[in-house]
Image 1 (spheres, rainbow, N blue to C red):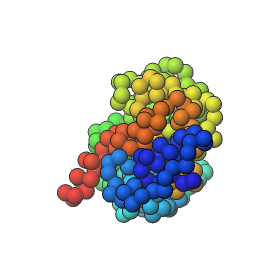
Image 2: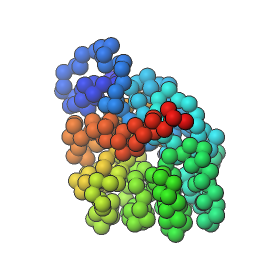
Image 3: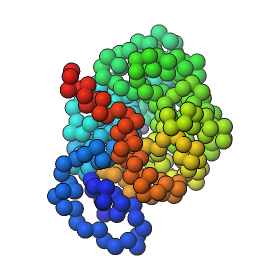
Length: 285
Ligand SMILES: [Zn+2]
């Protein structure tokens, strides 16, 4: 069964297999979106162009965390906040793999980063995404990029799958882990992300990486420590053009209640990313 639109259906989708069959969606469940409808905090709509289907399946807003620059400003049938290309080292991740067609900007010095960040900001990016790990930006440049992004009022998302890079991301002041890290996190890393309390976030993306025990445990511990959890599918890597039941099931395995999962898919990301402010800004432009 595909999960459609409403919170009632979301609850049905995430229930146990023994749950009784939910009633078919009514008109009220498939129209009149409100702030309580679904936000996917990690998509790649240039890589996997299914925006129409997402909107049709009840995803009202999404955060695109890596597209070529040419995709900035694209009009979609749902609200989309964009980062544009990831900042990385020359030839680094993701230019060395799936993102070679413009999904990264390779920089080896501050001037290049300054140029790139200011240009992305001018073209409508509201988030800067930084690749860390071994094949991303070296830490001093990642620090510089984070500072510049914050000066411009942009949030900083990091690709950091290892414990060391997740720790570095916290220490340079990044706002959000683009993925639940895959390597088991040291408690110090978890604590670093929970400081200051409630300010920083992790995007789940468990299903796209196979839902390993380590990743599930990381999400559980980050959540328990007070890190804000945002539902995200890494759409493009995961090929589901609507809410992902697999992601919901894995969030549940990480100890989240139905209410917490619902919040992580709706009001919490809406507020964290500032969709109200973004809508307001687009009206006055
Ligand atoms: Zn991604």
